[in-house]
Length: 188
Image (cartoon, rainbow, N blue to C red; front, side):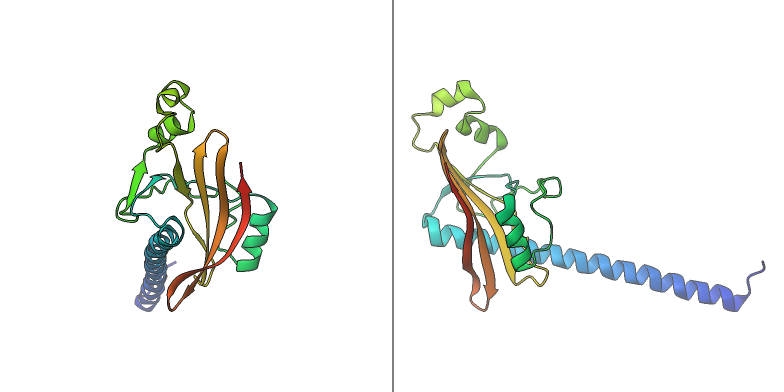
């Protein structure tokens, strides 16, 4: 088959549009991810200001705090959340909180967290009398498809049989992120 100049030109135009559309999609994904990161920062700092009311907190660097059970499935459906956050295999666990996002937090490394939570039992015995034997863990927020709602799992660890957590639903308004609902509470 011999290609003529018009057919080569047509193929070049088609190829240009395919590449352009793909780059536009990637650019939109990047903008969406930046918006989600900005919103995540706003939500975590809003929670800290409203509930903890402290200049400094101890907080896990990890954002791997999956939401759980039937309540989480109902939350996903009610607020049209973007991913199936109930399945921990699809939950993003590679994101670490950093001091740019939460400037007033003392961020704990995974090693420090294991010491406090007693997974490293020898060093836990040394830390057990320390009043700072507690920390918060914030999951990465999960957003609705229209970015109007966000669900974030938050837990507080205060000892071997001491802690609580919940899924907090925030709504984005002209005044920023406002707590709409607290769901799936647990206490240990």
